[in-house]
Length: 174
Image 1 (spheres, helix red, strand yellow):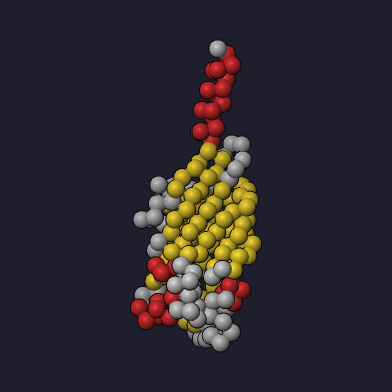
Image 2 (cartoon, helix red, strand yellow):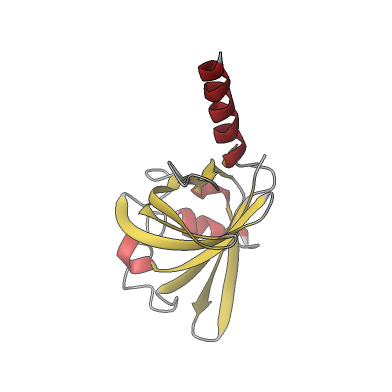
């Protein structure tokens, strides 16, 4: 009987310590900003984001951050610009409708601060990136800078758009 109680208590503790949740696609958003003509900043967002967050605050085992961004959901507030961004020259959403991130390692760096290291895949190009993020009770917030040319977004001929893009996210757990 004592062994059964210990097993039950052990399982109960592991359930309490694991923060494993699906993202709330209605409340999660990924924003981006990039300089244009070195004068003004273009702001945009991806409104359809899904994924899983699993963080173990006690044992620190099997942490995971998985994100899927629906690229056709891009919105910059200008339909013509959105259509250009969906075209072959930029995201080519017909061939590559999803941006994804799969963590290979997630570590707690301090109270409520984490670092996810993993593969970011955009337009069929995968690169290892590190994404620092803040965990609150129901949200994960963070940002990262990427070079859009590393992922074949826009190409060298689009010199009016800066190559550095800031991607920030506010992910709500369900």
